[in-house]
Amino acid sequence: MFLLPLPSERTSLNAHLRSAGAPDALRHLILDISRAAKYISYAIKTTETGLSGGTNQSGEKQLQLDVLSDTIVSHYLAESGLVASYASEEAEELIIFSDNAPYTVVFDPLDGSSLVEANFAIGSIFGIYEGLDCLGKTPREQVAALYVIYGPRTLLVYSCGKGVHSFILNDVGEFILYQEYHGIADTAKNYSPGNLRALADNPAYDSVLHDWLKRELTLRYSGCMVADIHHIIAKGQGIFTNVGGSKYPQGKLRLVFECGPFAYLVEQAGGASSNGNVSILDVPIENIHQRTPVIIGSAHEVAAVTKALR
Ligand code: AFP
Image (cartoon, rainbow, N blue to C red; front, top):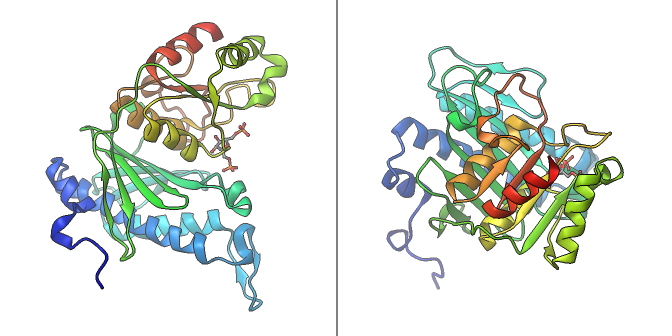
């Protein structure tokens, strides 16, 4: 019995990108990234003891999954012929491929990799810029952003500036449309407070947390930014924070690989983002590994938290 919808009865990622008016080169690049994500999804499911590096049951040495994911993405970016350079969370420097390809890709190949052993949801994050580099630009200049969440199901969520849309990986290895035009309400009912170690020396953050507790918002925090922001996008409301304290004065998260792509997606869905002063989308990229405080999600809550943290 054929249980999958026939190809003509569903919208593929390719068809959706086409109907969203993505330029051909950008469409091909996003499709190549989605191919890398399928391999990562497969690697997560099939890797045995090598989740954090080691040897499998046959005694073969395995790469750590985050290193393996980085290698997979790098391979597909090179193969696309569309990438001038890329910046990966796993590499110190920008990697240059060519000076006559149209895009720069920034990515975290496996965010939340420390959670793999616990079998929590993890993900990959991507931002796409035009041109040879992202330095000196701001995340607002991204022409697309996407993430893939590897949970009980594998979903890909993208925006190329015309709303935020999600796709589910089906049994024959194709991403098919799951939901179009995700929206984020102004008011949050869920909260996801990161870097709580900062409470000890950031009294304003401590009072924000107590305000959430007093107002009986619901805690939803997994420790993987992809899963925690996906929760906001899937539920259509929520607030996520990761702000500074003595251990991480700028918070723990990176502007280029994590906060920038998510700010693009969340603002596309009608939410807001802030580094405490301006939208994350307007923070200049001075170095590819720079960290930034981040307050992101439902617009009213982002404004209230930003004010309380000043
Ligand atoms: P790993 O990739 O090392 O697991 O870190 C995940 C992460 O960068 C991000 O996904 C989480 O939001 C953040 O760390 C969790 O940080 P806290 O431990 O400060 O909550």
